[in-house]
Length: 105
Image (cartoon, rainbow, N blue to C red):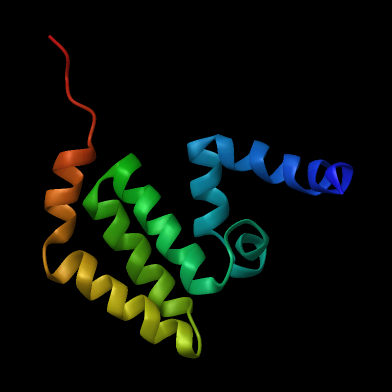
């Protein structure tokens, strides 16, 4: 069991340990992202959150809009509801201010 977990889990952990590579995987094609992040809307939300932390709100909003155009079925509604909570209610500004790295000195 442990050998199986290491064989299948180690490449995933290695890929997702690099923040930029993780963002590339999660924000890419849904078929490519699903093994790393779960259902389409979950991968999309992870990618949007990572884009917010790494590149700020404009990049996260752009990715949100792009993902929303590509989503199908129930995933569209789930992503749209999350986008309303995240962007339209202004939550990202407060979260981003709390989480962004501070300049030292």
